[in-house]
Length: 456
Ligand code: NDP
Image 1 (cartoon, rainbow, N blue to C red):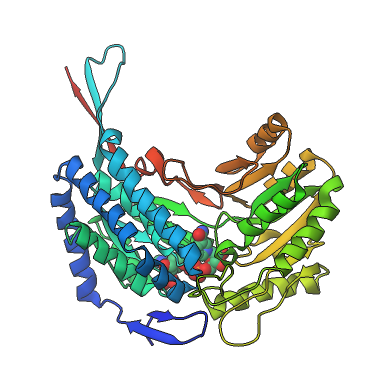
Image 2: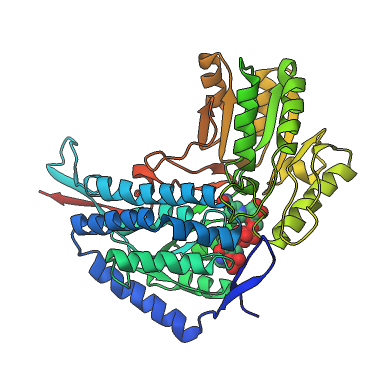
């Protein structure tokens, strides 16, 4: 049975299958990526930037085709998919525009060190392991800064996005990137472990589950390879007070249900102070119930299917576990009958620590609302999670909200907004949400040799 295949999650139909690499294919990819690095690192930074700029143009020019491909492969509604293509294009543009300056040598003003300079140099071929939830954006975050640096990329995408993966490789070729600087590999996990262990590979970046992150990091650790991990989240949306409950609920709905809830930094836990709780919960339940699902290829659809039947089944198990142990369902709770992996927008309250929904990531259109008496209690509940990706605080008192945001154990905290992602802002988490940062200058500072040259 083919591992890499396009299965339309709106219908369950298998559209296309692909063959996995054989051993000779793995060896060829490794040797191409290594030899490609020896050339690519000598290419002028301005030329690397020019190619990334052309890549950004091509994402814009081919937006429609790119958007329809992920709608077909992982079920993101086309209108949202176009947003992902635009963001990916903006990331390539950011590194094209800023890359050469970010690579400039740093002269150190240290007493006793006459001519001491730190150069930012590439380190070699890297393995990227990427998930299906944002097929283009996740790759852009990793590939753009590293190609700008002069590293080369072996990219293993999720098995349900093979055609999107091939499209990205094609666009790099069309932009003029040398063939060996970015190589798509349809590989097994064992082959990926072999690649990470191979001396021609210098690091690995993975976005995905904790399970995948742990496994890849173990292999990397055994072989002394650098890792960047962007794993899950159980992000909070803390409502301290609001002067516009309708607007707050609208944002909460959009943030939770976009991409059918399959985003690492989507707010999965809503923590609301007592005076606001009843109104927030009843309005959010109404809003969830009023969000219809539809065919992702239909331009009007807001909420599509989950990426696969198994994703829908796992989510339903988490909901059923909570309900069996006493949680209350205020909206949804079931799979939608018929073809496709659709799950109703679901809202749970009365969730307690013995339920899976309390501690696990809910990777789908499911929100949990908790009531707290004070901001301190909100912070304590927020920080009780093993995850630490992002969180938002909502209040009319900006100073108070800033202070609460600062106390959240997360990599990204927001006040009166949730989850804004821009190419120039850092992205990443703490605790079990991962290690390292992507995007901005930080994203170019991971797989880099900060090389000192001192002349006396
Ligand atoms: P996975 O983490 O299994 O998949 C993400 C990527 O990692 C895929 O390319 C996958 O490939 C790869 N992968 C998994 N295990 C290994 C391994 N041992 N060695 C090399 N590559 C590996 O996610 P799932 O699709 O199974 O989703 C499960 C859960 O993961 C979700 O419910 C969600 O909680 C979380 N997740 C988080 C994401 C995020 O954005 N942070 C994105 C996607 C998922 P393969 O399938 O071939 O194993």
